[in-house]
Length: 625
Image 1 (cartoon, one colour):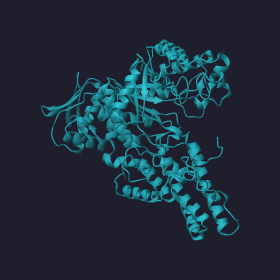
Image 2 (tube, rainbow, N blue to C red):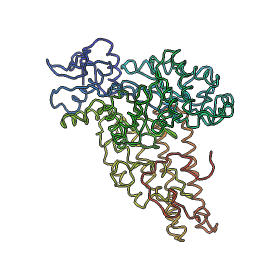
Image 3 (tube, rainbow, N blue to C red):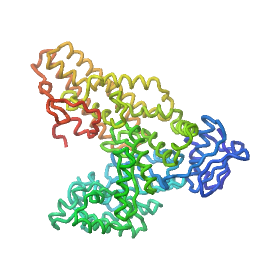
Image 4 (tube, rainbow, N blue to C red):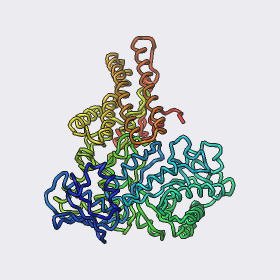
Protein backbone atom coordinates (compact mmCIF):
# COMPACT_ATOMS: atom_id res chain seq x y z
CA UNK A 1 0.00 0.00 0.00
CA UNK A 2 1.45 3.35 -1.09
CA UNK A 3 0.39 6.81 0.06
CA UNK A 4 1.23 10.24 -1.24
CA UNK A 5 1.34 12.39 1.89
CA UNK A 6 0.55 16.01 1.04
CA UNK A 7 1.51 18.12 4.05
CA UNK A 8 4.19 20.33 5.46
CA UNK A 9 7.37 18.59 6.54
CA UNK A 10 6.51 18.46 10.23
CA UNK A 11 4.33 15.37 9.76
CA UNK A 12 6.69 13.38 7.53
CA UNK A 13 8.97 12.01 10.27
CA UNK A 14 5.93 10.58 12.03
CA UNK A 15 4.71 8.86 8.87
CA UNK A 16 8.16 7.39 8.30
CA UNK A 17 8.05 5.89 11.78
CA UNK A 18 4.51 4.58 11.34
CA UNK A 19 5.40 2.97 8.02
CA UNK A 20 7.81 0.67 9.90
CA UNK A 21 5.00 -0.52 12.16
CA UNK A 22 1.99 -0.71 9.86
CA UNK A 23 3.52 -1.78 6.54
CA UNK A 24 2.89 0.99 4.06
CA UNK A 25 5.10 3.08 1.78
CA UNK A 26 5.40 6.79 1.20
CA UNK A 27 5.32 7.36 -2.55
CA UNK A 28 4.27 10.32 -4.69
CA UNK A 29 2.46 7.89 -6.99
CA UNK A 30 0.42 6.47 -4.13
CA UNK A 31 -3.08 7.28 -2.89
CA UNK A 32 -3.10 11.05 -2.24
CA UNK A 33 -3.97 12.23 1.26
CA UNK A 34 -3.84 15.93 2.01
CA UNK A 35 -3.41 17.07 5.63
CA UNK A 36 -4.93 20.42 6.56
CA UNK A 37 -4.81 22.18 9.92
CA UNK A 38 -8.34 23.07 10.99
CA UNK A 39 -10.59 23.65 13.99
CA UNK A 40 -12.15 20.21 13.51
CA UNK A 41 -10.87 16.67 13.06
CA UNK A 42 -12.42 15.07 9.99
CA UNK A 43 -11.65 12.69 7.18
CA UNK A 44 -13.33 13.71 3.91
CA UNK A 45 -13.14 12.37 0.40
CA UNK A 46 -13.50 14.70 -2.56
CA UNK A 47 -11.57 15.70 -5.73
CA UNK A 48 -10.31 12.10 -5.99
CA UNK A 49 -8.31 12.24 -2.79
CA UNK A 50 -8.67 12.12 0.97
CA UNK A 51 -8.45 15.22 3.12
CA UNK A 52 -7.53 14.86 6.78
CA UNK A 53 -8.41 17.93 8.83
CA UNK A 54 -6.78 18.14 12.25
CA UNK A 55 -6.44 20.64 15.09
CA UNK A 56 -3.67 18.79 16.95
CA UNK A 57 -0.76 16.95 15.39
CA UNK A 58 -1.68 13.55 16.82
CA UNK A 59 -5.10 13.73 15.18
CA UNK A 60 -3.43 13.91 11.78
CA UNK A 61 -2.04 10.43 12.45
CA UNK A 62 -5.39 9.28 13.85
CA UNK A 63 -7.17 10.38 10.69
CA UNK A 64 -4.53 8.76 8.51
CA UNK A 65 -4.94 5.47 10.37
CA UNK A 66 -8.63 5.47 9.55
CA UNK A 67 -7.81 5.80 5.84
CA UNK A 68 -5.10 3.14 6.10
CA UNK A 69 -7.52 0.65 7.68
CA UNK A 70 -10.22 1.39 5.14
CA UNK A 71 -7.92 0.69 2.21
CA UNK A 72 -6.10 -2.26 3.70
CA UNK A 73 -9.10 -4.16 5.01
CA UNK A 74 -12.44 -3.25 3.53
CA UNK A 75 -12.92 -0.24 1.25
CA UNK A 76 -16.69 -0.13 0.90
CA UNK A 77 -17.28 3.51 0.09
CA UNK A 78 -15.70 6.91 0.37
CA UNK A 79 -17.69 8.13 3.36
CA UNK A 80 -16.69 11.03 5.57
CA UNK A 81 -15.72 10.55 9.20
CA UNK A 82 -15.62 12.96 12.14
CA UNK A 83 -13.07 12.67 14.92
CA UNK A 84 -14.30 15.35 17.26
CA UNK A 85 -13.35 14.21 20.72
CA UNK A 86 -15.80 14.19 23.59
CA UNK A 87 -12.79 14.02 25.95
CA UNK A 88 -10.25 16.81 25.37
CA UNK A 89 -7.25 14.93 26.69
CA UNK A 90 -6.74 11.16 26.66
CA UNK A 91 -3.61 9.81 28.32
CA UNK A 92 -2.24 6.32 28.72
CA UNK A 93 -0.14 5.66 31.80
CA UNK A 94 2.27 2.72 31.72
CA UNK A 95 3.53 1.38 35.04
CA UNK A 96 7.32 1.04 34.85
CA UNK A 97 7.85 0.54 38.59
CA UNK A 98 6.68 -3.02 39.26
CA UNK A 99 9.83 -4.71 37.87
CA UNK A 100 8.93 -4.38 34.17
CA UNK A 101 10.93 -1.36 33.03
CA UNK A 102 10.10 -1.26 29.34
CA UNK A 103 12.94 -0.99 26.86
CA UNK A 104 13.20 2.36 25.10
CA UNK A 105 12.71 0.61 21.76
CA UNK A 106 9.48 -0.98 23.02
CA UNK A 107 8.24 2.31 24.42
CA UNK A 108 8.70 3.78 20.96
CA UNK A 109 6.66 0.94 19.53
CA UNK A 110 3.92 1.61 22.06
CA UNK A 111 4.02 5.33 21.25
CA UNK A 112 3.35 4.51 17.59
CA UNK A 113 0.23 2.61 18.64
CA UNK A 114 -0.91 5.45 20.88
CA UNK A 115 -0.44 7.93 18.04
CA UNK A 116 -2.70 6.13 15.58
CA UNK A 117 -5.35 5.77 18.28
CA UNK A 118 -5.23 9.52 18.93
CA UNK A 119 -3.88 9.58 22.50
CA UNK A 120 -2.78 13.11 23.38
CA UNK A 121 -0.48 12.18 26.23
CA UNK A 122 1.64 9.38 27.62
CA UNK A 123 2.77 8.93 31.20
CA UNK A 124 5.61 6.79 32.49
CA UNK A 125 4.78 5.86 36.07
CA UNK A 126 8.16 5.74 37.79
CA UNK A 127 8.49 5.44 41.55
CA UNK A 128 12.25 4.94 41.70
CA UNK A 129 12.95 3.70 38.17
CA UNK A 130 14.65 6.85 36.92
CA UNK A 131 18.09 8.09 37.85
CA UNK A 132 18.51 11.08 40.16
CA UNK A 133 22.06 12.38 40.39
CA UNK A 134 22.35 13.05 44.11
CA UNK A 135 20.72 9.78 45.22
CA UNK A 136 22.67 6.78 43.89
CA UNK A 137 20.41 4.26 45.67
CA UNK A 138 17.34 5.66 43.90
CA UNK A 139 16.70 2.99 41.26
CA UNK A 140 19.81 1.04 42.27
CA UNK A 141 19.87 -2.38 40.49
CA UNK A 142 16.42 -1.69 39.02
CA UNK A 143 17.47 -0.76 35.46
CA UNK A 144 16.18 2.81 35.88
CA UNK A 145 15.79 5.23 32.98
CA UNK A 146 18.68 7.64 32.60
CA UNK A 147 18.19 11.29 31.73
CA UNK A 148 19.28 10.43 28.19
CA UNK A 149 16.63 7.69 28.02
CA UNK A 150 13.88 10.04 29.15
CA UNK A 151 14.90 12.75 26.70
CA UNK A 152 14.95 10.20 23.87
CA UNK A 153 11.44 8.99 24.74
CA UNK A 154 10.24 12.57 25.10
CA UNK A 155 11.62 13.53 21.69
CA UNK A 156 9.99 10.50 20.09
CA UNK A 157 6.61 11.40 21.57
CA UNK A 158 7.05 14.90 20.24
CA UNK A 159 7.32 13.57 16.68
CA UNK A 160 3.66 12.53 16.92
CA UNK A 161 2.40 15.48 18.93
CA UNK A 162 2.06 13.34 22.05
CA UNK A 163 2.92 15.00 25.35
CA UNK A 164 5.12 12.86 27.58
CA UNK A 165 4.19 13.66 31.18
CA UNK A 166 6.27 12.55 34.20
CA UNK A 167 4.23 10.55 36.69
CA UNK A 168 6.17 10.15 39.93
CA UNK A 169 5.65 9.93 43.68
CA UNK A 170 6.27 12.63 46.27
CA UNK A 171 4.74 11.13 49.42
CA UNK A 172 4.31 7.33 49.48
CA UNK A 173 5.01 4.24 47.32
CA UNK A 174 8.75 4.42 47.92
CA UNK A 175 8.93 0.90 49.31
CA UNK A 176 11.93 -0.26 47.27
CA UNK A 177 14.27 2.39 48.69
CA UNK A 178 13.25 2.02 52.34
CA UNK A 179 15.77 -0.82 52.65
CA UNK A 180 18.79 1.49 52.34
CA UNK A 181 20.28 2.96 55.50
CA UNK A 182 21.32 6.10 53.64
CA UNK A 183 17.66 6.91 52.98
CA UNK A 184 15.93 5.84 56.18
CA UNK A 185 15.86 9.41 57.57
CA UNK A 186 13.43 10.33 54.80
CA UNK A 187 10.61 8.15 56.10
CA UNK A 188 7.75 8.53 58.54
CA UNK A 189 6.47 4.92 58.48
CA UNK A 190 6.10 2.17 55.92
CA UNK A 191 6.92 3.72 52.52
CA UNK A 192 5.66 7.22 53.42
CA UNK A 193 7.94 10.24 53.50
CA UNK A 194 8.36 12.27 56.68
CA UNK A 195 6.29 15.41 56.20
CA UNK A 196 8.00 18.55 57.47
CA UNK A 197 11.55 17.22 57.18
CA UNK A 198 13.75 19.57 55.15
CA UNK A 199 15.75 16.54 53.99
CA UNK A 200 12.53 15.25 52.43
CA UNK A 201 11.92 18.46 50.51
CA UNK A 202 15.53 18.51 49.30
CA UNK A 203 14.94 14.97 48.05
CA UNK A 204 11.64 15.86 46.36
CA UNK A 205 13.22 18.87 44.70
CA UNK A 206 15.85 16.66 43.11
CA UNK A 207 13.12 14.38 41.77
CA UNK A 208 11.17 17.29 40.30
CA UNK A 209 14.29 19.01 38.99
CA UNK A 210 15.22 15.80 37.14
CA UNK A 211 11.80 15.65 35.53
CA UNK A 212 11.97 19.30 34.59
CA UNK A 213 15.27 18.71 32.81
CA UNK A 214 14.11 15.61 30.90
CA UNK A 215 10.54 16.39 29.83
CA UNK A 216 9.34 19.19 27.58
CA UNK A 217 5.92 19.07 29.21
CA UNK A 218 5.17 21.63 31.88
CA UNK A 219 2.78 19.16 33.49
CA UNK A 220 3.74 16.70 36.20
CA UNK A 221 1.83 14.07 38.16
CA UNK A 222 3.13 14.06 41.73
CA UNK A 223 1.32 10.94 43.00
CA UNK A 224 0.49 11.24 46.72
CA UNK A 225 -1.95 8.31 46.83
CA UNK A 226 -2.53 5.63 49.45
CA UNK A 227 -0.51 7.24 52.23
CA UNK A 228 -3.15 6.37 54.81
CA UNK A 229 -0.68 6.02 57.70
CA UNK A 230 0.82 9.44 57.14
CA UNK A 231 1.76 11.16 60.38
CA UNK A 232 1.39 7.95 62.38
CA UNK A 233 5.07 6.92 62.65
CA UNK A 234 8.16 9.05 63.29
CA UNK A 235 6.12 12.16 62.56
CA UNK A 236 3.86 11.37 65.52
CA UNK A 237 6.88 10.82 67.78
CA UNK A 238 8.44 14.12 66.75
CA UNK A 239 5.45 16.42 66.34
CA UNK A 240 2.46 14.80 68.00
CA UNK A 241 -0.89 14.08 66.40
CA UNK A 242 -2.24 16.17 63.53
CA UNK A 243 -5.28 15.64 61.29
CA UNK A 244 -4.47 14.03 57.98
CA UNK A 245 -6.04 16.89 56.06
CA UNK A 246 -3.79 19.42 57.78
CA UNK A 247 -0.72 17.31 56.99
CA UNK A 248 -1.75 16.86 53.36
CA UNK A 249 -2.36 20.58 52.86
CA UNK A 250 1.04 21.44 54.27
CA UNK A 251 2.85 18.83 52.20
CA UNK A 252 0.99 19.52 48.96
CA UNK A 253 1.74 23.23 49.27
CA UNK A 254 5.45 22.56 49.84
CA UNK A 255 5.61 20.27 46.81
CA UNK A 256 3.65 22.74 44.67
CA UNK A 257 6.10 25.48 45.62
CA UNK A 258 8.87 23.30 44.23
CA UNK A 259 6.87 22.62 41.07
CA UNK A 260 6.34 26.35 40.56
CA UNK A 261 10.07 26.92 40.91
CA UNK A 262 10.53 24.69 37.85
CA UNK A 263 7.50 26.10 36.02
CA UNK A 264 5.48 22.87 36.37
CA UNK A 265 1.74 22.48 36.78
CA UNK A 266 0.89 19.56 39.05
CA UNK A 267 -1.82 16.95 39.30
CA UNK A 268 -2.17 14.30 42.01
CA UNK A 269 -4.31 11.29 42.88
CA UNK A 270 -7.33 12.40 44.89
CA UNK A 271 -7.85 9.60 47.41
CA UNK A 272 -6.01 11.25 50.31
CA UNK A 273 -8.46 14.13 50.09
CA UNK A 274 -11.70 12.72 48.78
CA UNK A 275 -12.12 10.17 51.56
CA UNK A 276 -12.94 13.20 53.73
CA UNK A 277 -15.53 14.62 51.39
CA UNK A 278 -18.52 12.30 51.69
CA UNK A 279 -18.58 12.26 55.50
CA UNK A 280 -16.69 15.35 56.57
CA UNK A 281 -16.58 16.01 60.28
CA UNK A 282 -16.99 19.62 61.44
CA UNK A 283 -13.34 19.92 62.46
CA UNK A 284 -12.21 18.78 58.99
CA UNK A 285 -14.20 21.28 56.94
CA UNK A 286 -11.50 23.93 57.30
CA UNK A 287 -8.89 21.49 56.03
CA UNK A 288 -10.97 20.87 52.90
CA UNK A 289 -11.33 24.60 52.29
CA UNK A 290 -7.55 24.96 52.45
CA UNK A 291 -6.77 22.47 49.67
CA UNK A 292 -4.39 24.33 47.33
CA UNK A 293 -6.42 25.58 44.37
CA UNK A 294 -3.61 25.21 41.83
CA UNK A 295 -3.58 21.40 41.98
CA UNK A 296 -5.59 19.11 39.70
CA UNK A 297 -7.11 16.19 41.58
CA UNK A 298 -7.32 12.93 39.63
CA UNK A 299 -10.21 10.74 40.79
CA UNK A 300 -9.11 7.17 40.16
CA UNK A 301 -11.63 4.36 40.12
CA UNK A 302 -11.27 1.02 38.31
CA UNK A 303 -13.95 -0.91 40.15
CA UNK A 304 -17.37 0.20 38.90
CA UNK A 305 -19.39 0.00 35.70
CA UNK A 306 -22.26 2.34 36.49
CA UNK A 307 -22.39 5.79 34.88
CA UNK A 308 -24.39 7.32 37.74
CA UNK A 309 -21.88 6.06 40.31
CA UNK A 310 -19.00 7.79 38.55
CA UNK A 311 -21.04 10.95 38.02
CA UNK A 312 -21.84 11.13 41.72
CA UNK A 313 -18.21 10.89 42.76
CA UNK A 314 -17.02 13.31 40.09
CA UNK A 315 -19.52 15.84 41.42
CA UNK A 316 -18.34 15.19 44.98
CA UNK A 317 -14.78 15.90 43.83
CA UNK A 318 -15.85 19.15 42.22
CA UNK A 319 -17.17 20.40 45.55
CA UNK A 320 -13.53 20.79 46.56
CA UNK A 321 -13.23 23.76 44.24
CA UNK A 322 -10.23 22.53 42.25
CA UNK A 323 -9.74 21.19 38.75
CA UNK A 324 -10.73 17.52 38.51
CA UNK A 325 -9.60 14.77 36.13
CA UNK A 326 -10.36 11.06 36.04
CA UNK A 327 -8.31 7.87 35.80
CA UNK A 328 -9.77 4.56 34.70
CA UNK A 329 -8.03 1.24 34.38
CA UNK A 330 -6.94 -1.14 31.67
CA UNK A 331 -6.84 -4.23 33.88
CA UNK A 332 -3.34 -5.63 33.38
CA UNK A 333 -2.47 -6.12 37.04
CA UNK A 334 -4.08 -9.54 37.54
CA UNK A 335 -0.96 -11.59 36.93
CA UNK A 336 -0.08 -13.06 33.54
CA UNK A 337 -3.52 -12.41 32.05
CA UNK A 338 -5.51 -9.18 31.59
CA UNK A 339 -9.24 -8.54 31.78
CA UNK A 340 -10.25 -6.46 28.77
CA UNK A 341 -13.89 -7.47 29.10
CA UNK A 342 -14.28 -5.76 32.46
CA UNK A 343 -11.96 -2.90 31.48
CA UNK A 344 -14.16 -1.95 28.54
CA UNK A 345 -17.32 -1.82 30.63
CA UNK A 346 -15.62 0.30 33.25
CA UNK A 347 -14.06 2.57 30.59
CA UNK A 348 -17.39 3.10 28.81
CA UNK A 349 -19.26 4.02 32.00
CA UNK A 350 -16.54 6.29 33.38
CA UNK A 351 -16.02 8.11 30.06
CA UNK A 352 -19.74 8.72 29.73
CA UNK A 353 -19.75 10.12 33.27
CA UNK A 354 -16.82 12.38 32.40
CA UNK A 355 -18.67 13.69 29.35
CA UNK A 356 -21.82 14.29 31.41
CA UNK A 357 -19.92 16.25 34.06
CA UNK A 358 -17.61 18.22 31.75
CA UNK A 359 -14.55 16.36 33.00
CA UNK A 360 -12.16 16.69 30.08
CA UNK A 361 -8.96 15.00 31.31
CA UNK A 362 -9.06 11.17 31.19
CA UNK A 363 -6.10 8.96 32.11
CA UNK A 364 -6.19 5.24 31.31
CA UNK A 365 -3.85 3.44 33.69
CA UNK A 366 -1.96 0.23 33.01
CA UNK A 367 -0.74 -0.85 36.42
CA UNK A 368 1.55 -3.84 36.94
CA UNK A 369 1.12 -4.79 40.59
CA UNK A 370 3.17 -7.62 42.06
CA UNK A 371 5.45 -8.28 39.13
CA UNK A 372 3.94 -6.79 35.96
CA UNK A 373 3.63 -10.13 34.20
CA UNK A 374 1.06 -8.99 31.62
CA UNK A 375 2.34 -7.40 28.41
CA UNK A 376 1.06 -3.90 27.76
CA UNK A 377 -0.20 -5.23 24.43
CA UNK A 378 -2.42 -7.63 26.34
CA UNK A 379 -4.72 -4.65 26.96
CA UNK A 380 -4.65 -3.45 23.36
CA UNK A 381 -8.43 -4.05 23.11
CA UNK A 382 -9.00 -1.77 26.11
CA UNK A 383 -6.65 0.90 24.77
CA UNK A 384 -8.43 0.88 21.44
CA UNK A 385 -11.89 0.72 22.99
CA UNK A 386 -11.14 3.82 25.09
CA UNK A 387 -10.12 5.69 21.94
CA UNK A 388 -13.45 4.76 20.31
CA UNK A 389 -15.58 5.90 23.23
CA UNK A 390 -13.56 9.09 23.49
CA UNK A 391 -14.39 9.98 19.87
CA UNK A 392 -18.01 8.90 20.17
CA UNK A 393 -17.58 6.02 17.70
CA UNK A 394 -19.92 3.70 19.50
CA UNK A 395 -22.77 6.17 19.06
CA UNK A 396 -22.42 6.13 15.26
CA UNK A 397 -24.52 4.33 12.68
CA UNK A 398 -24.08 0.59 13.24
CA UNK A 399 -22.65 -0.11 9.77
CA UNK A 400 -20.08 2.66 10.08
CA UNK A 401 -19.16 1.56 13.59
CA UNK A 402 -18.66 -1.98 12.33
CA UNK A 403 -16.25 -0.82 9.62
CA UNK A 404 -14.30 1.44 11.93
CA UNK A 405 -14.23 -0.89 14.90
CA UNK A 406 -13.24 -4.13 13.18
CA UNK A 407 -11.17 -2.85 10.28
CA UNK A 408 -8.98 -0.55 12.33
CA UNK A 409 -8.43 -3.14 15.02
CA UNK A 410 -7.21 -5.67 12.48
CA UNK A 411 -4.49 -3.22 11.49
CA UNK A 412 -3.56 -2.66 15.13
CA UNK A 413 -3.47 -6.38 15.86
CA UNK A 414 -1.74 -7.49 12.66
CA UNK A 415 -4.81 -9.31 11.36
CA UNK A 416 -6.58 -10.60 14.45
CA UNK A 417 -10.22 -9.72 14.91
CA UNK A 418 -11.26 -7.83 18.02
CA UNK A 419 -13.18 -10.87 19.31
CA UNK A 420 -10.22 -13.18 18.78
CA UNK A 421 -7.85 -10.79 20.54
CA UNK A 422 -10.26 -10.64 23.49
CA UNK A 423 -9.41 -14.31 24.05
CA UNK A 424 -6.21 -13.04 25.62
CA UNK A 425 -8.39 -12.86 28.78
CA UNK A 426 -9.34 -16.54 28.87
CA UNK A 427 -7.03 -17.80 31.63
CA UNK A 428 -9.26 -15.89 34.07
CA UNK A 429 -12.48 -17.37 32.67
CA UNK A 430 -13.08 -20.41 34.88
CA UNK A 431 -16.83 -20.87 34.40
CA UNK A 432 -19.29 -20.46 31.55
CA UNK A 433 -20.91 -17.59 33.40
CA UNK A 434 -20.99 -14.50 31.21
CA UNK A 435 -21.57 -12.14 34.12
CA UNK A 436 -19.03 -9.39 33.51
CA UNK A 437 -18.65 -8.89 37.26
CA UNK A 438 -16.99 -12.30 37.50
CA UNK A 439 -13.37 -11.22 37.39
CA UNK A 440 -10.51 -13.01 39.07
CA UNK A 441 -6.82 -13.84 39.08
CA UNK A 442 -7.21 -17.56 38.44
CA UNK A 443 -4.27 -17.41 36.03
CA UNK A 444 -1.95 -16.61 38.92
CA UNK A 445 -3.47 -18.19 42.01
CA UNK A 446 -3.88 -21.56 40.29
CA UNK A 447 -0.32 -21.44 39.02
CA UNK A 448 1.33 -20.65 42.34
CA UNK A 449 -1.06 -22.54 44.64
CA UNK A 450 1.16 -24.99 46.48
CA UNK A 451 0.55 -28.65 45.46
CA UNK A 452 0.84 -29.88 49.06
CA UNK A 453 -0.51 -27.02 51.18
CA UNK A 454 -3.33 -26.25 48.74
CA UNK A 455 -4.57 -23.05 50.36
CA UNK A 456 -6.55 -22.12 47.21
CA UNK A 457 -8.01 -25.61 46.69
CA UNK A 458 -11.21 -24.88 48.59
CA UNK A 459 -12.49 -22.20 46.20
CA UNK A 460 -12.35 -24.17 42.93
CA UNK A 461 -14.59 -26.90 41.54
CA UNK A 462 -14.09 -30.06 39.50
CA UNK A 463 -15.00 -28.36 36.21
CA UNK A 464 -11.92 -26.21 36.15
CA UNK A 465 -9.70 -28.63 34.24
CA UNK A 466 -12.23 -28.88 31.42
CA UNK A 467 -12.41 -25.08 31.22
CA UNK A 468 -8.69 -24.94 30.42
CA UNK A 469 -9.12 -27.74 27.89
CA UNK A 470 -11.74 -25.55 26.20
CA UNK A 471 -9.38 -22.58 26.22
CA UNK A 472 -6.70 -24.71 24.55
CA UNK A 473 -9.18 -25.69 21.84
CA UNK A 474 -10.16 -22.06 21.33
CA UNK A 475 -6.53 -21.07 20.77
CA UNK A 476 -5.99 -24.01 18.43
CA UNK A 477 -8.72 -22.57 16.19
CA UNK A 478 -7.37 -19.00 16.28
CA UNK A 479 -5.09 -17.55 13.64
CA UNK A 480 -2.62 -15.74 15.89
CA UNK A 481 0.51 -17.52 14.76
CA UNK A 482 2.72 -15.45 12.51
CA UNK A 483 1.31 -12.16 13.81
CA UNK A 484 3.29 -9.53 15.73
CA UNK A 485 1.54 -10.59 18.91
CA UNK A 486 2.01 -14.32 18.59
CA UNK A 487 4.42 -14.24 21.50
CA UNK A 488 1.89 -12.93 24.04
CA UNK A 489 -0.69 -15.51 22.95
CA UNK A 490 2.00 -18.20 23.22
CA UNK A 491 2.46 -17.27 26.88
CA UNK A 492 -1.26 -17.70 27.50
CA UNK A 493 -1.37 -20.99 25.60
CA UNK A 494 1.50 -22.45 27.65
CA UNK A 495 -0.25 -21.21 30.78
CA UNK A 496 -3.43 -23.09 29.76
CA UNK A 497 -1.40 -26.28 29.37
CA UNK A 498 0.02 -25.93 32.87
CA UNK A 499 -3.33 -25.08 34.47
CA UNK A 500 -5.17 -27.88 32.68
CA UNK A 501 -2.81 -30.26 34.46
CA UNK A 502 -2.31 -28.40 37.77
CA UNK A 503 -5.49 -26.49 38.61
CA UNK A 504 -7.33 -29.38 40.32
CA UNK A 505 -4.37 -31.63 41.00
CA UNK A 506 -3.98 -30.59 44.64
CA UNK A 507 -7.62 -31.42 45.38
CA UNK A 508 -7.30 -34.86 43.80
CA UNK A 509 -4.03 -35.52 45.59
CA UNK A 510 -5.47 -34.71 49.03
CA UNK A 511 -8.70 -36.61 48.35
CA UNK A 512 -6.88 -39.74 47.17
CA UNK A 513 -4.44 -39.60 50.06
CA UNK A 514 -7.10 -39.21 52.74
CA UNK A 515 -9.22 -42.01 51.19
CA UNK A 516 -6.15 -44.30 50.79
CA UNK A 517 -6.71 -44.55 47.02
CA UNK A 518 -3.28 -45.81 45.95
CA UNK A 519 -4.17 -46.11 42.26
CA UNK A 520 -5.37 -42.53 42.30
CA UNK A 521 -2.14 -41.43 43.98
CA UNK A 522 -0.11 -43.17 41.27
CA UNK A 523 -2.02 -41.16 38.69
CA UNK A 524 -1.35 -38.01 40.66
CA UNK A 525 2.35 -38.83 40.75
CA UNK A 526 2.40 -39.14 36.96
CA UNK A 527 0.57 -35.82 36.67
CA UNK A 528 3.16 -34.12 38.88
CA UNK A 529 5.97 -35.49 36.74
CA UNK A 530 4.24 -34.40 33.53
CA UNK A 531 3.74 -30.95 35.00
CA UNK A 532 7.46 -30.15 35.19
CA UNK A 533 8.18 -29.91 31.42
CA UNK A 534 4.94 -27.94 30.93
CA UNK A 535 6.07 -25.49 33.58
CA UNK A 536 9.46 -25.22 31.89
CA UNK A 537 7.75 -24.43 28.57
CA UNK A 538 5.70 -21.69 30.22
CA UNK A 539 8.79 -20.21 31.88
CA UNK A 540 10.73 -20.08 28.61
CA UNK A 541 7.83 -18.57 26.65
CA UNK A 542 7.15 -15.99 29.33
CA UNK A 543 10.84 -15.13 29.54
CA UNK A 544 10.87 -14.52 25.78
CA UNK A 545 7.93 -12.12 26.21
CA UNK A 546 9.67 -10.30 29.04
CA UNK A 547 13.02 -10.03 27.26
CA UNK A 548 11.36 -8.70 24.13
CA UNK A 549 9.61 -5.87 25.96
CA UNK A 550 11.48 -5.15 29.18
CA UNK A 551 14.90 -4.61 30.67
CA UNK A 552 16.48 -7.55 32.45
CA UNK A 553 16.34 -6.59 36.11
CA UNK A 554 12.99 -7.46 37.62
CA UNK A 555 12.79 -10.87 36.02
CA UNK A 556 14.87 -12.18 38.93
CA UNK A 557 11.59 -12.15 40.88
CA UNK A 558 10.05 -14.46 38.27
CA UNK A 559 13.09 -16.74 38.49
CA UNK A 560 12.53 -16.96 42.23
CA UNK A 561 8.81 -17.67 41.89
CA UNK A 562 9.07 -20.24 39.11
CA UNK A 563 12.08 -21.82 40.81
CA UNK A 564 10.17 -22.13 44.09
CA UNK A 565 7.18 -23.68 42.32
CA UNK A 566 9.35 -26.18 40.48
CA UNK A 567 11.09 -27.11 43.72
CA UNK A 568 7.77 -27.62 45.53
CA UNK A 569 6.52 -29.88 42.72
CA UNK A 570 9.72 -31.91 43.01
CA UNK A 571 9.24 -32.09 46.79
CA UNK A 572 5.68 -33.36 46.23
CA UNK A 573 6.99 -35.97 43.77
CA UNK A 574 9.59 -37.15 46.29
CA UNK A 575 7.13 -37.34 49.18
CA UNK A 576 4.52 -39.15 47.11
CA UNK A 577 7.09 -41.58 45.70
CA UNK A 578 8.40 -42.39 49.18
CA UNK A 579 4.86 -42.89 50.46
CA UNK A 580 3.88 -45.22 47.60
CA UNK A 581 7.12 -47.18 48.08
CA UNK A 582 6.36 -47.55 51.82
CA UNK A 583 9.53 -45.63 52.67
CA UNK A 584 7.44 -43.23 54.78
CA UNK A 585 4.23 -43.73 56.72
CA UNK A 586 2.56 -40.43 55.89
CA UNK A 587 2.61 -37.14 54.02
CA UNK A 588 1.93 -34.78 56.89
CA UNK A 589 0.76 -31.82 54.75
CA UNK A 590 -1.99 -34.01 53.27
CA UNK A 591 -3.19 -35.17 56.66
CA UNK A 592 -4.52 -31.72 57.46
CA UNK A 593 -8.11 -30.82 56.74
CA UNK A 594 -8.33 -27.62 54.75
CA UNK A 595 -10.37 -24.65 55.90
CA UNK A 596 -12.27 -22.44 53.48
CA UNK A 597 -9.99 -19.84 51.89
CA UNK A 598 -12.86 -17.35 52.17
CA UNK A 599 -13.10 -17.82 55.95
CA UNK A 600 -16.11 -20.13 56.32
CA UNK A 601 -14.24 -22.90 58.16
CA UNK A 602 -15.38 -26.27 56.75
CA UNK A 603 -18.16 -24.75 54.65
CA UNK A 604 -16.26 -24.26 51.39
CA UNK A 605 -17.28 -21.33 49.20
CA UNK A 606 -16.56 -21.71 45.49
CA UNK A 607 -15.29 -18.24 44.73
CA UNK A 608 -15.19 -17.27 41.05
CA UNK A 609 -14.45 -13.60 41.76
CA UNK A 610 -11.24 -14.00 43.72
CA UNK A 611 -8.74 -11.31 42.72
CA UNK A 612 -5.84 -12.19 45.02
CA UNK A 613 -2.69 -11.64 42.93
CA UNK A 614 0.04 -11.36 45.58
CA UNK A 615 2.48 -14.21 45.17
CA UNK A 616 3.46 -14.23 48.84
CA UNK A 617 -0.14 -14.93 49.89
CA UNK A 618 -0.74 -17.47 47.14
CA UNK A 619 2.36 -19.59 47.54
CA UNK A 620 2.34 -20.23 51.29
CA UNK A 621 0.64 -19.46 54.59
CA UNK A 622 4.00 -19.38 56.32
CA UNK A 623 6.33 -16.43 56.93
CA UNK A 624 8.14 -15.57 53.68
CA UNK A 625 8.83 -11.85 53.87
